[in-house]
Length: 263
Length: 259
Image (cartoon, rainbow over all chains, first blue to last red; front, side, top):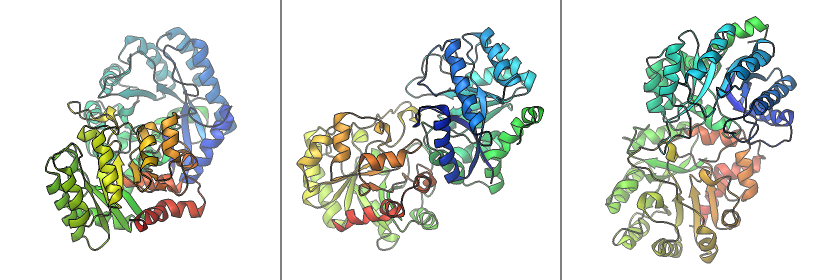
């Protein structure tokens, strides 16, 4: 089975450089047969309202790690609706003219239903890349500007031609799955929550296996706990293959083909 | 493989695999390679008739054959006449240990009632499992938020009752803490840790380094969690074979031998 992970970071890992931290990830990927990661921001602790310089630094670190392990990771560009003009330039630098293949994890302190996201999403259309958006529905209350699946559905309905990946499916997945159910260009992503059983079964039942995508949210989480949501799920093997990599490769196919990158 | 952290019956907020048929749960555990499971009861979280909870747990475990499911009864030291529940767990149901849910039962680990319970359980040579949490508070039912129990008081308590054998379940929420209390708990020779909520890249290796290869036990938190989470953590940790065996089985057996 070919396993691709849509959601990974270089934070909370040993090592003083992006290359060193990526090497640690590769060692752990090998133990569980993970072929490739989509890597994004998060080398440093989460920064509210990151400056353009901080956003650029995060993206540079990702590109360094990917350059060192080109067969094991692709990069996803971090952008901030706090600074749209800069974000559009950064998209061009990292995706249009650089090696990155998608947008995400967008995790800024502006909720993603904001119109400020629209120009960024329109730029995604130009390269046909998917967008991974962080979402939570935290029972104790969301952080300032933290997006919910409802916010993502609003954004996705304004841009039906873009494929959106609902990061964490809102954490409270029983609610998140129901929230995105009728918005066909939104995919459930299973990363970054406890491995509560039933998550993947419900997602497959309500959305179809074609709309469920594996991600881990390493280094804060482990590959083990997040892969278990698929490996341990009572769903057909064919569904597991789609969730663990098939769906992600299908979403990335246009941009990988355009860039001449392997899928 | 000994799984030190499974539960029977119904979780209050979601249907789970095998929650209406202990035999079904056992069949699944067998298939996953588990040779023995230490079982608590989800009923113990909210039911006030703890004696009834433990009676049903003991009966369900007994029905699954000798020694496969080891019942760990629930005792709530804030409940009237809890000492009788403890006695029945030991003398009537012949349990080797008890499982406590302090956050669901509304007491902290500095409560004198807990200290008394820990002491009496130690005198009966019972293993004491403390479920420090059951679920990430961020995903709990909004009308019933139950924050995790603070383990800090155990730093003082564990050495004071040297014959007490404590197993901390579902302890992930403070995995990154480096306070003096947490360091003392990790170094206490009579405190064991399950791996169900251990997280992060290299998380299991860090837990072993911070505690001891002899005091980490396999616990899945199944069926609330996917069993494979704990299994893959051990498989992917890159541990020496002797440490793998100790976690899967050896350390739990050592605990049982002392019971």
